[in-house]
Length: 142
Image: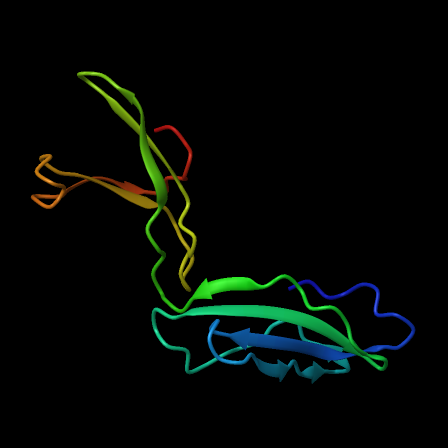
């Protein structure tokens, strides 16, 4: 996250970082000070693969803790979730154009593009064929 620019009349002590899974009470941790500067990142370990986590941050100065940021919702996974809202935008005998929205969760490794598959039309289960593998972007015509 970006550091706060207005810490009030007291100097910034650290950031409070909250992590919860939507079921249990949030776990509060504080960021470290390195050379008197509050760090703007936090490492969480022992997360459960596939579980959803919510994270928020607040700045803390001599007067206390400030307002908490909007919650960021993530899934503990190296892989992104499926793209949203795939749809046909044009269809002819020679061509089919499709669009989709980016996935809600991009995975720990980030995303470098999309893979587009086709099949023979039998309930989408038979014979998937990779027809494109590359740096495509959601909502872009190819």
